[in-house]
View 1 (cartoon, one colour):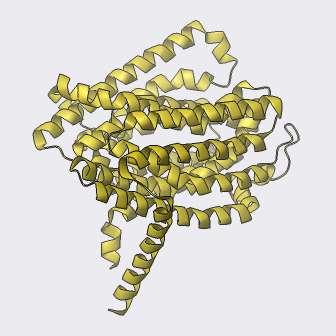
View 2: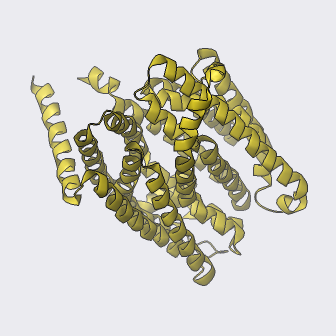
View 3: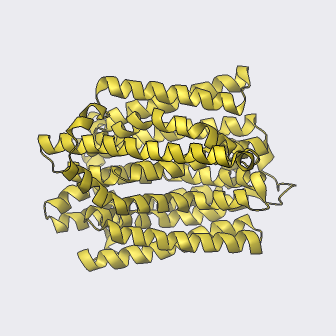
Length: 450
């Protein structure tokens, strides 16, 4: 029974994300204790800027590659993987040129902002992390979650060790930390190239037809992924440009990081749901797509109820563990309380499973254009809410409340458009969720007493 569970896709995906999240959270906690609030805010902006740009780089092809590889023969497979590598390289070059140009032309402005680190180092990082990121999407399409765990563990594990050694012995500057990050990403990419997981050697197999296939699908999924990233990073970006400054960015990053921890199972199960739903859709098995949607949405929603209750009750303890005592009290500069923001985000967490699964559902049935519309309506609602919260009320609590509002809008839109294609029911989501846990309990008891 144990061997069967360990080999199961959902377990491997979850285990991988748990390991990576724990390393990320631990590294985040060490940096929060190592750096002053304003310098830590600069690090957060570097990571936020990089995450946003990577949504554009990889959004062009990643979702489409996963969908089309699901039912591809060997010849088509090599062409698709080659096109993914080629388009990714072109997008990386394009972004790097723009960032370097901006850094040269607007050097003084950028140097005096919190984004100096990002414009200086990200163009190099973009090339160094391209191969291993390409490997991840190919491995996800093939449902090789054990290999995904290996790649992520090398990258995240080595950087965590660097942060740990720095915390106890080195006391590196931000620039030195970023250089260490560059070296680790180069090493991770080298490993994936040697193992042949990244698809770089298949660039010559790319054809205009497969390029067009990925780009036609990707023109919508790119906007969707950029929009999804904006839903996470718009708060930080707007705060960084507001009078509240880097201190508010650092404070707000604490509840955001805790929300990422809460989303570990969501990312894990979505990573397994999307290839399954896509394959069923490509093969015309509509009822299977519906069943997968109901099961994943329901099971995750009940899980998130439990997690949100724990987050709300233990908010103070979680903030203490993650960032230290300095973030527990009301900040004397901004007047904000991180613990209260965490509690608002615990309510936001309840809504995430159904919202995310409606997006996955739309992409899997080849409606990425509808998903893009859904996400950008949510982004517009979030940005409007952020401006009102920050510039009118000057409140981080209201910024968090805006997250709840735009997610409710996303759930309504997602269910509305999916219902047109699949005839869905809210009630069935919760029934299927209960059935999932009943079946899980029965399997455990059966194997226990067998």
